[in-house]
Length: 443
Ligand SMILES: [Zn+2]
Image (cartoon, rainbow, N blue to C red; front, top):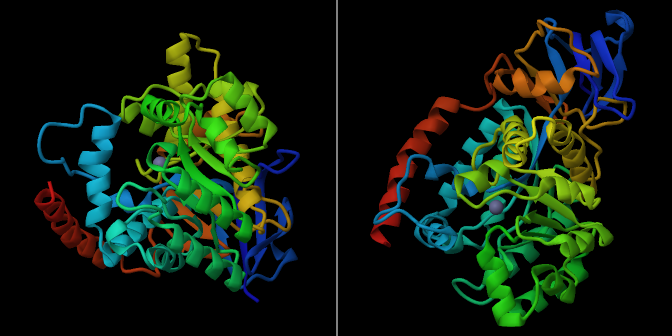
C-alpha cells in the first residue's frame, strides 16, 4: 500500500455538504481518499507528504466530450478557400485530418492532449475518436496514452457511413469487449457514433443491437448544426430525438453532444429517458454555430454536462464561455454564473459516475483520489460561498502545481516527471507537419 498526505491546504471538497476546510488536509491510501478535514499531521504516517502552501486543493476536473485526435490541427489551415459552413468544415478539415492519421499519430495526439489535460487540472476524459485509415486497434493507441499519462478515460470510436457502411462498429465492439474482460475501471467504453446525418438505417440497427448485447450507452453528436436536423427530416420525416428513440438510443447511459437544435419536446424526451446532454460552448462559438439553449435544457431537468470538443483540454474556460455567452445573448448580467459552475463541477461528476464504477469529483472518504492543487493562494475570502467566483476569475488563470490522478502524483511542481516531455513535444513537432502534408496531398 502507498499513502500520501496533503497538508496546509484550502480544501474545497465539493462533497454532499459542500464543505470547505481552511488549513485542511487530505489523506490518501493507494487510489482512494481516506480522510479529509482539519486533523493533526501526525494522525497518519504517510509514505509521502505534500505541503500545499496555502493553495486551493480541489477535485480533479472531468471533460465530458473531447476529441484527442484533433491535437495536430493547431496552426493548420486547410488548403483552398476557408470553410464557409459546418459541412465544409467537416469535409475540408476534420474528415481529411482524421483520415490522414496513422497509429502513431493517434498515440501522440492523445498523449500530448492528455499531458495538457493533466496540467489544466483534468483527471478524467470522455473521448470520441476517429481515424479511418487505422481504425482497427486505434482505441488501444488512445488507451496507451491514457495509461502513460495516468488519467482515467472513457473511449468510443465514431461510427459513420461517410467512408463505408458501418465504419468503426467492429472497433467499438472489440474495445468494449476488451474493457469488460479487463474489468479495470481506469478505462471504460461506450459505443460511439458520429451523428444522424452520416448514419443510415442499417448502421443504426447494427449499433442498437450491439449496444443492447454489450449493455453500453452511446456517445453521439446531435443537433450541432441545422443540417443534422434538415437531413434527418428530409430523409426520414423525423425530428432527431424521434429518430434516436426509434432505435432505442436514448437512455441513462447515453451521451448526446451539443443539442443546439433540440426543441422543447425533444428536451422533454431527453429528460424522460434520463439521457445525458453535453454542451461545448467554445467549440460552438468557434464554428459560428450559435448557442445551445442551456437554460432551457436545465429547466427541462436534463442532466447537462460540459466538454471541450477538441478545442483544448482546458475546462474552466468552457464554464466562463458558457455563462458569458448566455449573458450576452439574453443581455442579462444575472444569468448562468452558478449554472456554469454547477454544470462543470456537479453535472460532469454525475456523468462520470454513471460511466465509471469508482466515484469521483468530490474530496471525501471512499472517493477516487483525483485531486488538483492549482498555484493559487486566495487574496480575498475563499469558502464554500465564494468558491465559484474564485473558480471563474482566478483558478481558471492559475497554473497547476500538482495533479494527482488515481492516487498517483502526475504533475509535480508543474512538471510531469515520469514522462520525457521535451522528447514527446519534439516527436509531435516532427509528426504534425508530415500529417499536414498528407492532408494537403489529399485535397
Ligand atoms: Zn465533438
